[in-house]
Length: 503
Image (cartoon, rainbow, N blue to C red; front, side, top):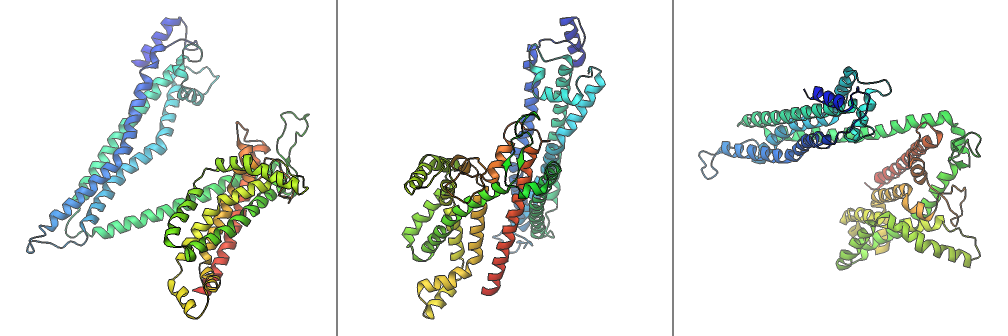
């Protein structure tokens, strides 16, 4: 009925057929409001899920207490296998998991079902003139074209908008019904299962084990997915650019021209200067953050008083929370000019943007990462090792150098590795203080660039994902991943060696 009415209104207004345009100000209210209303209901279900879980816990706990009897009456008191909280958790799990599964399935597959059904209805309507596919019309409707006045909206968009609102409304109502049925069934049957013979704690621990296993699998699959996606895009890049040029060439200029007769139309994709700049800035940053952070951790762990420690460590952690754009502004406006003045005073030619300014700023920024984690590692060393060393006649400094630091070395190596990863992945400070020039140099007073900066530059804006310029970002990302993986393997080897020695 709605479709026929829309068709009659269209013909009456224009006296033509479905290919003509018309204005429909009345559609501005109605379809969009109705669609947003049912989406609000679906979103409300996600908010109700924690309340449903709390209700299940309360019901299960109350049921267990009722079975156990009056605690003041020893004669009627029944000892249950598990605590009342375990029975509450048992009902919570079965009351929350089925509706959660309904919401997850609706979120993952609902959009595809709606799009497929509406696209089939658009194709069956016979209103397509061949210039657009049903999928293109559906994309335009979702973008709001059916609500435009005048130019742009045709009868096929009206029909698609009606069908989309109708199917989405039906799907959301079905989700609401399935959610209610799943919640009620889970709550009812799990409560009925609470008896004296039920070993609720075993069920809860098994569910917790499954949840932990699922989390581990998700983490592993996410990593595998990232590597696979980078790998296939990088392989597309290496079909356009030889690996020898990428890994061994010293010229990086990926800004390809739009026409073949323009200068630099082929581009240059030698990544050696990019990785050289990354290693240079990382080395400068770690030469500052490593010693300063480790010495700060030793001072906090062994020399600082409790009152001094109570304000020094929070202050270091506050430094770690400063946004990188603030650090970049400091490097560009304050430290960069000072580095240039210092270089000119020494008779050196210093660029306005230098690796030294970016590296020093980055090193100060990651000091809290090294100090905080190293401090935790030093405090985790058994106190008996320190006391035994002092009892044998060693001084405080000898105890720290020969006992405490080697015993805490696995944690310290982890702190340094995290700091290196943080330095390699930093982007904003390098953009603002070191520039974008890919220079093959070891001079800290010259401008350089890093891998992450080039990835951001290559993928910023509307890019074509079939050009070597854009695909180069994925090749850089894949190479950076394996470099970081190699660092992790080396760090694990070092940690394993010292653990075998000090355990």
